Image (spheres, rainbow, N blue to C red):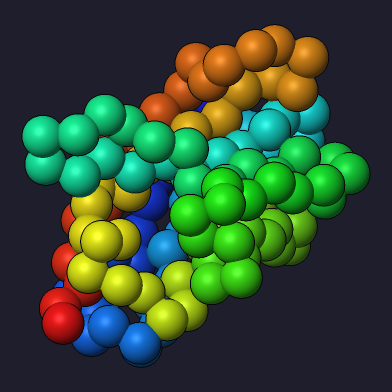
Length: 119
């Protein structure tokens, strides 16, 4: 089963940019759907974006559409979340998640990485 490791979190100013990366260990992402979720303090965990590894099809939440982009690097076996023009409301712990494409939901989760957007 794939294991996930996130990196790239930190402090960013509103209007800046930040990139998160999710690396797979144990196997490749082939056959998987990989997503980013986020959870702000006191709030539920919310969907941000997903990418189907083999097809490259993506879906992005309306709240970040036009600002965040999800992509994959096949050579590096990583999925990235490019955050452009972040807002203080984007402050949260960001989690990478994955599951086999034919299954619903997400069974595998990373440990999370903190993103703090300052105004």
